[in-house]
Length: 64
Image (cartoon, rainbow, N blue to C red):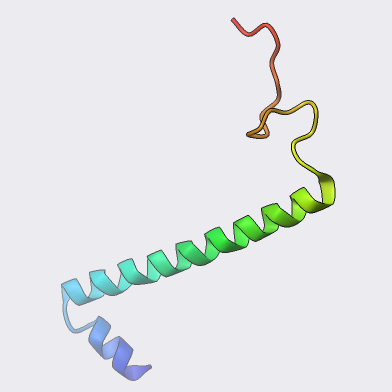
């Protein structure tokens, strides 16, 4: 762990690169969790309800 911090703080671009990699990894993990949670909700409740369109928005009739 000490070596990682030494590499990360070796220079500005090392720091920026490490943060970019960390952010991409964290974002990917969050997307996977979100999709899994959405899958569970759809399996439990069904999707979409009759009052919603495919995106989950309420259907507005006679929209002008």
